[in-house]
Image (cartoon, rainbow, N blue to C red; front, side, top):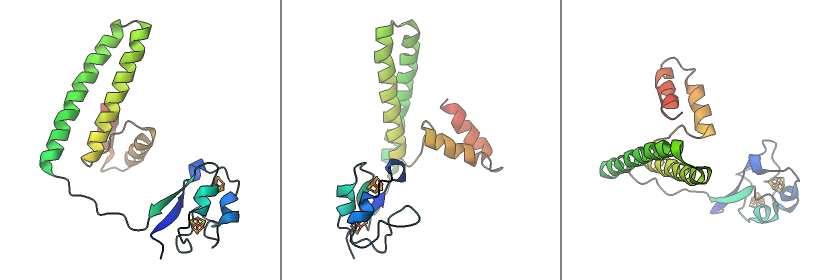
Length: 158
Ligand code: SF4
Ligand code: SF4
């Protein structure tokens, strides 16, 4: 069995079928639109041929997830809270800034948001500030038991 197999990102695929022609096993030609894992030998020909970079070779066995230590999560939260305060200050400055200054302040706000999102993800949490996580939360909101917490999270980051 190959150590890696191909994975197709459907959203990037322009359906020109080049991968189907070069695949020696037929694994790339699957009705589901995804590569057939059981037939893939991990040769990488499809990834090389794909003009849209829609195919990636990924390991068959992912390394074990490292344990998350409370001491590190606590520090992540501390840093994230510091960044939240920083964003509040930047938003305040934004109101009085010139057009040129606004560009810099907006970039700083955005970079702080990304840092917070990374810190939270590393700590095992998801922040609803991307389109995908918001959609997920909106779906969770349909569940009677979970709707309140999903609503709170959405409002917190709007
Ligand atoms: S890695 Fe090789 S076998 Fe697997 S789908 Fe791509 S071309 Fe086919
Ligand atoms: S070569 Fe790339 S873009 Fe073309 S069908 Fe295959 S995955 Fe899609």
